[in-house]
Image 1: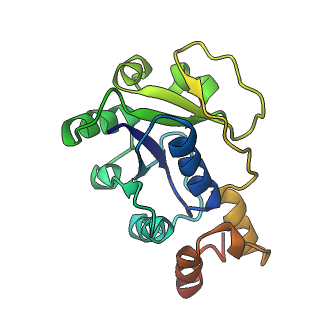
Image 2 (image 1 turned 45 degrees about the vertical axis):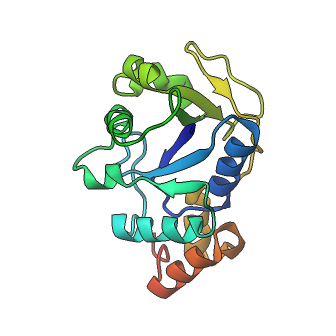
Length: 192
């Protein structure tokens, strides 16, 4: 079995995450996508974070009914910053899979991968890099081994969802019904 790893804060998870994961399965040679919610993301300052338990509950609600997707909570169980190399080491011990796992990186973070990620050379030993379009329709030239996924460039982000909720805009169609229910029940993101 071939696995791909899709990490992030998932604050909240939205349709863009699911569409990307589905495209990974449909267009690349992977059988399963592991969603890995970060405890403390190293590349982004958390905004309006409702806490790891709430983000995990929303991710469970998002993935309901998708047998090809699973949640790997190892970063939530580790204290401190969620470094990818630590996660890759843990996944290689915990799971049995064919080849290297595919590590999905957005094209917003990919240009600085070698400069700002912890132990990028080791990451390249542990995983095959999959670059997803987030900000650029064209493929960027990158100085390390990678492959692009030809995913849709969907202008949806967790930041956008949070802002729309806070500003009383339209947001419900951007998340799964289960996530919508959690956000409304607990009044999440209203005051960010």
